[in-house]
Image (cartoon, rainbow, N blue to C red):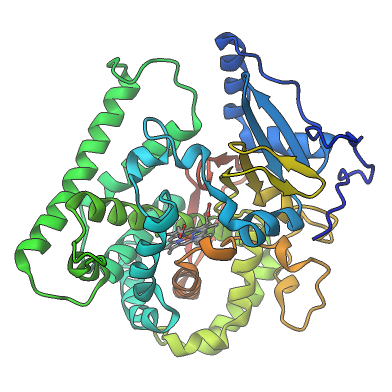
Length: 465
Ligand code: HEM
């Protein structure tokens, strides 16, 4: 695919004839103080720093870190296609996913999000059937039931942290549907561990991990608490021996070609991975949607009109979803403006040609979905919330690859259909009963960790409709 690397202001960055490195910020020296200073600047606001680089340097930004590490930042749809589809076999997971001490791998181990190669392929094949579009239809009723259960605790006029509420709900849903488990009081332990480890993966910590700093002690505590929850779940199920037909039973009963079953550690890693990947992204997508609806009364009214027409006071069913196209467009547009997975990292396994450059083997490549979703070359008035962009009859100006909330290629989100069904059911059930409003003068800040979250939660007031 041909890539024209132009800056967002329309000019072309200077090219090196010998295909040297793309433009980018000055190299960060080997000196640890320089690295720390740079790290603090970037991690305090990684998304805005990267957006600034794309504006200044164009669609491929290069950063040399220390003597040997080359890091690339990409924002062009053609380059997403190269890395995720065309040359996907030349990349492995990298960056914040892989670091076993401070990255996601510390909490997820070698589960589906962090693993690579043959092992990843084998695990993907094993897990895929549990999340297949037809299979998940059976989960719809449970999703609505758990949403209605949460609604019982909601009261007109109450102010709640909507992000926290969405996290609790989506975690309960993933636990019940995929693992046939009621997590109840354990939900807090899992949610806390997920937050602490994301902050760790995106923060700067100058102290060695063995040092008992308050932050390290907290990490150890939440890690232990979460491992206890998951270990108890696996032990209890191993003892019970019955096959409940859910994903956990499938994992426990699976064997590889040599007839070897999965170890407790492997099962633990897949469960924690599904807990994390399966709840936090959907919860954030919904939180951003409530935030946007509160600021766009015309969109909210159109959504309410669609819901009232279909629901007429009855509980929502799976069959109703196809009668709610606008609800789907609202969610799609919300994930364009606030893609829950705003950045994806890969490592080049060989020298790889991307656009007009050769990316050396071992480089880290970061695909910035947020930048691509806000690029005026693909999206008219990119900062406006216009769900109608996703109306099927609407001629879109955006290339197919310019909208990738669930990624694409072999590592496309395995829970894509699950998430879209769940988000539509939750949105429709809650918006059928309540409006969620923001307090005057509320200033939202984004917190770009592994997932893009509202910083400090999202306080909103419930208004019964
Ligand atoms: C709105 C909700 C969701 C969004 C936006 C989302 C987005 C993504 C994205 C962008 C990736 C690719 C990451 C990368 O390759 O670097 C991914 C992978 C993944 N997602 Fe989702 N996801 C969502 C919901 C879910 C749900 C509900 C589940 C499970 C029930 C799930 C499970 C996974 C897993 C296991 C992977 C790794 C797949 C692999 O590498 O083979 N996700 N997701």
